[in-house]
Length: 219
Length: 219
Image 1 (cartoon, rainbow over the protein chains, first blue to last red):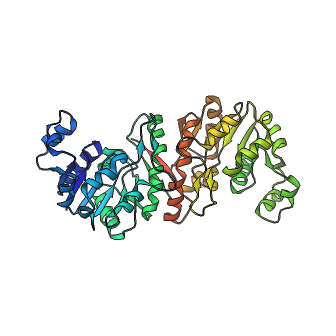
Image 2: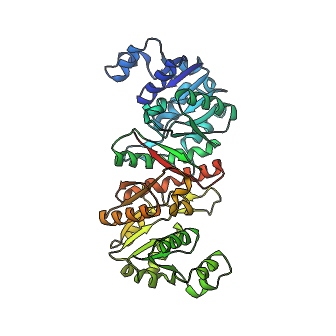
């Protein structure tokens, strides 16, 4: 499948790399491809080391793809998707793995949207023709794409209003190695997974590692 | 140990029953003991069926006990603890298992306090001499006291500023059968477990049961 990954951070790179490895045709979307290509940091290194992965601006990346991954920071996600543009997203599966984390008041971050709304819903409302599926926002970048690292089953979640979009995303998740995928329901249920982040952050503090995930144990 | 359980709902009854079974001297705290004794419902039935478990008003129950469990509804917890009174709570371990769930706008409930504060912290601030430990607010009443029902390990959490109070609570949790207890840190970390509730509620909806819990899987 032709997939655009919007965002060049740790999450975007992990997704792009894994999707490429699994045989998808991946284009990373970024604000300014030339600038990204010249960066003297991990992002620049990654782009130069993966000539097989495309690099384009947000709009071109989304336009040329069948599915789009929002791997941008939560606070800029609506801006990034606006740059991609509603026409480029219309009818497409939009996999939202962002969290509305606000670090402006220090650590741990608070949530920029909480309890009576979610970033997943904001994105769905802003782009009503996109088929938004919220997923993978409950674990760290490495585990998103290599869950087997944990050596025991753990759970990921999907939230979305479009059943066929969720079905496609569940297949993708299984191809990453996620054996336990719980469909929480409509996009409203993104409130649940986004509000799990404060617990995730404190678990990371207590365990001293981000290499953990939850498994939903039921009889 | 002499333990007061404040609250006669499903959670209070489960805790009182299990603590009694484990040999503790339990007193249930309620607003009006005579009224509770005469109730023609599950609470009345429970009280009449357990003559070995004491029943007293909030203040008398807390005063006569070495540790106090807040098993009241989150929205009335501060009122209930005020009726118990600061002197009756001073120096004691106060096990807070409530959640600030607000059902006034329908289901799923929202949280009356969220993100930048928590009910656990509000209780600790209101009763600075109590040694508050937040725990067990992440699973249903039966699993709180009989986690083995799940047939596989799952995790519970403790949050609190007093290390010796947490240590006592961890021993209690182990006596219930909780093999995996994660100490998240100070009472501030109660924000994490309280904000997990929106995910818990949506999991309950999706799984069609409240008999589930999360296990924190780490390598």
